[in-house]
Structure formats: C-alpha cells, structure tokens
Image (cartoon, rainbow over all chains, first blue to last red; front, side):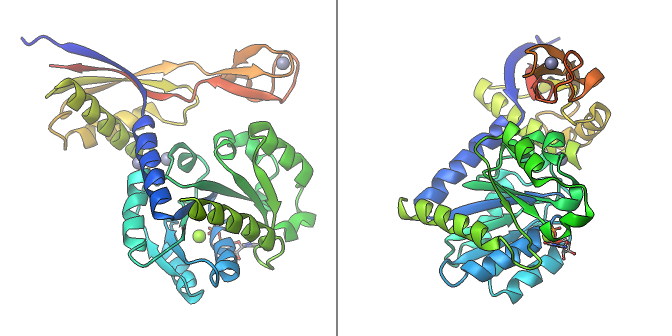
Length: 224
Length: 114
Ligand SMILES: Nc1nc2c(ncn2[C@@H]2O[C@H](COP(=O)(O)OP(=O)(O)O)[C@@H](O)[C@H]2O)c(=O)[nH]1
Ligand SMILES: [Mg+2]
Ligand SMILES: [Zn+2]
Ligand SMILES: [Zn+2]
Ligand SMILES: [Zn+2]
C-alpha cells in the first residue's frame, strides 16, 4: 500500500481565476483596450442600456460587444443594428464567465481594432460577482421593480462594482422604491461606488453614465 | 449550473497544486464550504463525480466537504452573531448595519495524494 501524502493548500477556489484575471488586465493595459463588465439580474436592462451607450459613444470610441446573456442571439442582432461589432460567448449553461472565457471572447472580438470592449455578463447577481473577468471596471444595473433592498441581499455584487446604474426610474411611481435608501444601502457595502439613476428606455441619465465611461476609457487608453 | 462551474475551478486549482508538488494521482480533496456560500454540497459532490471521472489526475478521488459556520458582525453594537439563525438584523440591538465575517468561503483546505 502506497503512502498517502497530505498537501495543505488553504486557497480559495477563486484564487486561480483572480490570477488569470489580473494577467488579462495587464495585457489589456499594454494593448490600450478598456474592458467593461456589465452585470445585472435577468431583465434589468443590460441590453437596452448597452444599445443607448453605444449610440452615444460609437462615433468617438471604437466599441466591441461580447454577449453572454441567455437570450443573446436577439441581443447580438440589436448590437449589429446599432453599428457595432458584436460576438456571442457560449457559456454552455454556465452561470458566470471567468477570466479564461472572457479572454477567448476578446481574442475573437479584437482582431478588428477595439478601444472599448463591453461584456454583457450572464443575467445573475451571485456568480458573476465571484469571478473576476479581467475587466478594468465593473458596472451593475439594478432596476426599480427589483426593490431598493437588493444591495442588502446581494452584497458581494455591490461590493465589486465601480458604478451602479439604477434603471427604469420611469416606473418609480408604481413601486415602493426609495432612491435615497437604495443609494444608502449601496454605500454601506461600497462607499466608493458611483450611483447613476437612468431610464434606458427614454435615454434619461444615460449621458451622465456615458460621460463617466468615456472618461474611464480615455484615462486607461491614454496612459497605457 | 453553479456547482459544475465551481467544480471545474477546483479541478484547475488541484492541477496547479499537483504540478507544483509533483503529484500524479489524487485520492481526495478536502474543501471548506461556508454555510452561506450559496453552494449546495450534494450538487457539488455529484458534479465532482461526473467531472473528476474525465481527468486522469483526479478520477475516482473523493471530494470531502467541511462546513464552516457563518458569523455576522454588527456595526451597531459591535457584537457577532450566527448568520443562519438571525439573518441581516442584529438579534442584540436590531440594527441592520451588519456584515458577514465568515461563511462565504469556498476554499481548498488540503489534498491527499498517493
Ligand atoms: N419601463 C422601462 N423598461 C425598460 C427600461 N430599460 C429596459 N426596459 C425593458 O426591460 C426589459 C428587459 O430589458 P433588457 O435590456 O433586455 O434586459 P437584460 O436582460 O438585462 O439585457 C425589456 O422589455 C426592456 O424594454 C426602462 O428604463 N424602463
Ligand atoms: Mg440582455
Ligand atoms: Zn468558471
Ligand atoms: Zn453560479
Ligand atoms: Zn447589534
């Protein structure tokens, strides 16, 4: 009978992905490519917001979009209609994207030249927060019908986000949603998060968001 | 499927540890799972059996799960309490200004190799 060796590891399952994500970020910096990771629950408005954002920025920044949301076929066509290169990422039923899957998508996306790559992550507030994709900035969308206490229920998502878009503010009168309270809950988890209320449907507030994003891209690309 | 994704990441980490330590065949992997990690132990072991069978290094190996208790800290009164029993509201002072100290871990504790 062979001797059994015990190797003490004491390492988070996410540590390996974290390393790969950091490596990807370094390479993106060298190439002057900004990657945005856009996350939300299904139906919060990722695709609608993306389409609006692209309309505002496409003439000044070369944009590419990676779709990983479940109904991504429809979404990819919406992007093509907006005049932006987009590809679909097949997640094989997986509930999140990790750094390697993102890298594969980027390899396909940036053989054209892209300055801003936007990843529409899988519609889910739990797993995408646990897996660093290698993105330069993380954005989450929280829509009014989901309730203002969502930051309390999904703390990690709001902790990893640089910016939170509160979408569907047009329906606020019909829901018990307090914007101030919601912002406070977000700040409890993440004092640095920027909070921008928007209505992706009409475009209200989207300019402020696009302005923030433009600034981030410029800083990243210019000093690379 | 959440658990399958986690299993793939465990296997990848184990491969790395095996490479670093010159291990050729793994007999068991001991995983520490926080009570509120959101990972279901039974699904995880099922996914493990299925996925590990496809990798020579870990095929036939056992995934042992040790559960770690979840503890929440209260910013209101400074005390800690068990998360699963009381949730987000502090049982001592009813404050909602609370945060998780431990309980969402998914980490590899140790690996047994032949
Ligand atoms: N009322 C309202 N509906 C919106 C808004 N933004 C998106 N929607 C609707 O919400 C649904 C889901 O939007 P979608 O962008 O596909 O969400 P995704 O699943 O996160 O990509 C669609 O029916 C959109 O028309 C908004 O600002 N207000
Ligand atoms: Mg979508
Ligand atoms: Zn993964
Ligand atoms: Zn998951
Ligand atoms: Zn308390």
